[in-house]
Amino acid sequence: MSEAVKHEPRVIPYVSAINEGIREVLKEQDDAFVAGEDVGAAGGVYGYYTGLYKEFGPERVFDTPISEKGIIGLGVGASATGCRPIVDLMFMDFIGECMDEIANQMAKMRFMFGGGATLPVTVLTMAGAGQNLAAQHSQSLEAWLAHLPGLKVVCPSDAYDAKGMTIAAARDDNPVFVVFNKASLALSMDVPEGAYEVPIGKAAVRREGKDLTIVAISRMVHEAMGAAEKLKAEHGIDVEVIDARSIQPFDTETVVKSIKKTHRALIVHEAVKFGGFGGEITAQIQEEAFDYLDAPIMRVGAPFCPVPFSPALEQAYMPNADSIVKKVVETLEL
Image (tube, rainbow, N blue to C red; front, side, top):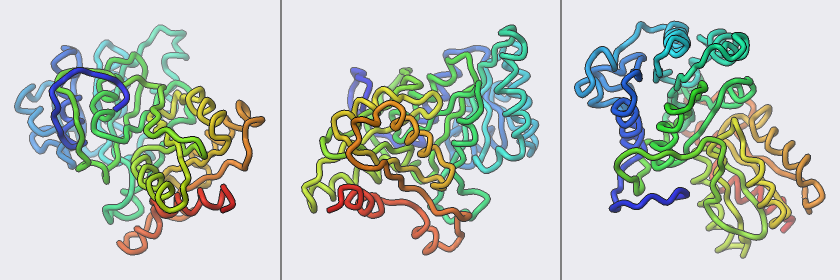
């Protein structure tokens, strides 16, 4: 846990933390509402809207038609006219259905209106593989969004951050995408009651180390932590693990500070390696800390192919602790 909040210990899963974050926002902001497919009485396909329809009513938590274009259009229009909507895109894969609204309206409207429009819209969506949902429901496309000026993009890796980043996103006056990970929903940890923020644009050092820095995104933070333990036990390698948390804006300062200590870097994300956000992190390290590097910056990501439906092939496709260990050993030339 990176932000100290005094509270009685209370362990809840990632999915419940999201629910609490949304509830705190609806309690705090009278002009906030939730809209999306099956977010009402059904509580959402993954259950993180459970109970909100009953508590806040159909005017503040309501189902939309099956139209991602309409959902994002609703969020853009409502936010530009004074509301603070939370809109749900059931799977991140569906952003292709509404990319014109995202890229040409949501991201740009504030600038094209000379600052006359404010768009405090929060988009909650789900990414990642590992549940045998095949190629159209398992992608990690955060790099698409981070490339668009005007959007903020966060990828909470644990329950504490899932709640705190949901609240921070809803309080922000800019469009923010909160990208959750479906394979992380059951991961539990100590989460405070009440409202708190996890800052957008600030990475977290999850493990101190001296031999190599791993910068990980979303669920890969947990794989990196597992790899760090294996590397320590089997090779005596002391790895530092940084949870990027926010990729737009990205906390270059924290990463560079770590590189100046460890002199080596490995970037890990679940998204396809080619064209993934790891390439941007690599470029920033090269620009800011090249003289401190003792080895090439390495990356671990998914292979350049659609996510397989076959459980065995999907497991082979996804990066994990073992693939991270292998790449670290290669980087250190052991």
